Amino acid sequence: MVDSNLQFGDKAKGAVAIDAYPGLGKTTSVLAFAKAFHRREIRIKGTHSRDGHQRWPVCRVGLTGNTGLKEFNRAMLEFYAHPGITRGTSADLSRRTLDCVTSCETILLVVDDLHFLRMHATSGVEIGRHTSSHTSRPPRRTLAEIGAMIGVSRKVAGRLARHHGITPSTGRPPVDPEWFHDQYVHQRRTLRDLGHEAGRSVPQMSRIAKRYGIPIRQPADAGRARQLSESH
Image (tube, rainbow, N blue to C red; front, side):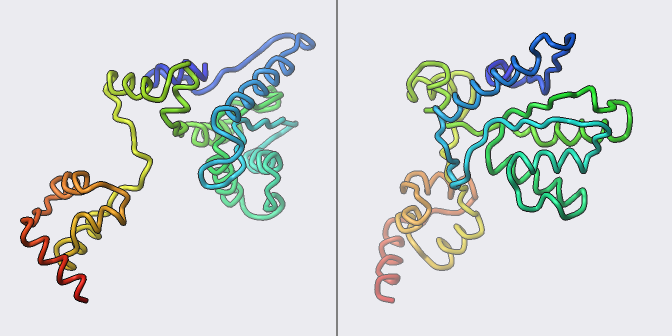
């Protein structure tokens, strides 16, 4: 299902429920899959996220009798060894849980003993919506990571993405239009200078200026602006 959602993003399935008679290995099978999935993600993406957080692709929570939303959040925080497990309102615990899920780049949530959850009661509906909000954020992957998953190079993965109408992200933060306008128009800085600060080339900065409706100065004006900035 996980690989299918990656392949067919418009037909993503949010969850799978596994039901069988006791003693047939439901938990064992799911945990074996979760272990293999965890190891695959770590092998491809590394043990830590780009922000330096420890990566936990899989979160496993076991339910007990009469589990409500607050108890569910506490169980998730206990998995992440969060220090704020014993204090705070239900909303506070929910925010901490979401922060753990996003920071640790958790993709798969395994909920064991689901029969303890009263699905048609208020608590069951709340937990259902809660887990959906946490797991509905698709993971951001690089072309190299996607290529490793499907057995092709980064360059081939990029060509496949563009073939299907997907424009790969550069991974850099967007250039703030107000900052760009102020620095280029009022402060008279050059595109080369701004591009060096924003991590982009002069042609890229020129295209961004055109997209923001910022008129490009003529080369002579740009040269005079550079001389003025250097004189100061």
